[in-house]
Image 1 (cartoon, chains in turn orange, cyan):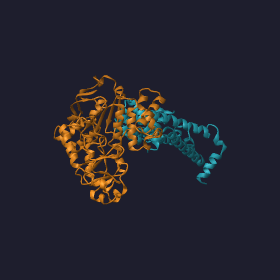
Image 2 (cartoon, chains in turn cyan, brown):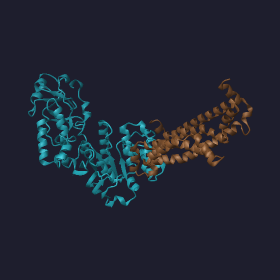
Image 3 (spheres, rainbow over the protein chains, first blue to last red):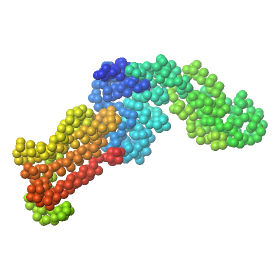
Image 4 (cartoon, each protein chain N blue to C red):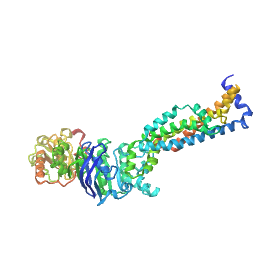
Length: 396
Length: 222
């Protein structure tokens, strides 16, 4: 565990970057330091590998003061990823990644083998091994940066705004990749960002720092969203923290109605005999159970449903996997106000109204369920875009 | 009677190709002065420039020294050194070194100082020692500019080494000075042509060194 004990950084001109900060950073989890510029988050990170020396206080790594070992030995035991990747432009990708193993005295071919293994791990095409950094996109460069930090398999990974310089789509990909990697590797990661959404998405623990380098709140993201410690944290979280908090509630508990779901080839008699559970709309599916679109019960009884007469069902959510936030978003986007739930294969498992989702949200808040959960990883996209492909063209 | 005629006559004359005043001898003398002066200038300018560029300290002092050195007239310095030290290689080396140090020093300083700070930060954060940061991260990236400084210093030395002849030493300047004195313009033009050719050869040498020593990742990224 990394323990930051009453650490202060004061510069010769009197500026205090970090003010008596204490933090216990748990092992094998992602701890995010977040805050506005000038809050000392980067300084705090850089004090962990002694790129900045604390003026007061100390930092313990597994109980040992970080100043007990030579500074370069300390740094080689911690992966370090920075904003623009900071790749060495004169070295090929494979040699960039092999940097720390080479510093540790590994042989050239062993280091390169290890580097190639890591390229695969972070999702880089092995064909890029012999390229130079200028030939790679920003997102690829950042992947190389992460691979380079992981090369010597350090237990700790320090990441200083690693994804801020890439566009939102690439950033989301890198974030998902980091979560996937973390599942595999279980590193102790300290991650600095100014983006609260990134903090909430990635963090197991989130430390919100305020200007002047003081700790405002240190909590798991769900707790941060539900119970901000003060006005500063609340303001920093933004206006829609209530909605974002729904990312932490699973959609598994929703009451899905199957009554309003009919197959396109169903007979008129079967339809009129349906108990739609009070739904004013019917969801028409194809023979495999995949959604086609909404229709009014009267229209369907009059004759077979052609796709042209159906209303778009928007994008479905995957019941159980997606969060309540995703379900609510689907309902809000649906022209009928009802969300369509599907299984992993895209077959309809039921429909649910905005009202029923609202009830589920109230119930979840009441029990505090999901407060120990982590974001489901799809909170950004809300609905799995793969299902969108199945929308019949005419129904769009 | 034009310049080309002089050039043809000079190089066509078999007498100019051997003996103590022959082209090979004078060329070797010229090369020797140039190489010694260049080696001294690089030994002074490179470490100072790389170190100040790496630490970022002492840049102002450096700029002042370089400007001062540039203001010294080579010829005046030569005469002064000749008066002080008498006949020998030293009076020739001093003005050549003084001429060559500023471009080497200033470009090395600027080149290292202007290296993108993020790879340097990453290198330190990964646990590279300061000397590794300089030689494995900063220098390879700064190399094209550093070589540019060495190249202009070398070309200036090659052209200016002609003044050695003024204090009774050899080199290609012998032809020019003797030619002027004897009103033998064929000799003057021949000597000048040789100096120019040597300067061009120097340029070619540095171009080749750049191709060999600079990583393709740096060369094409520019």
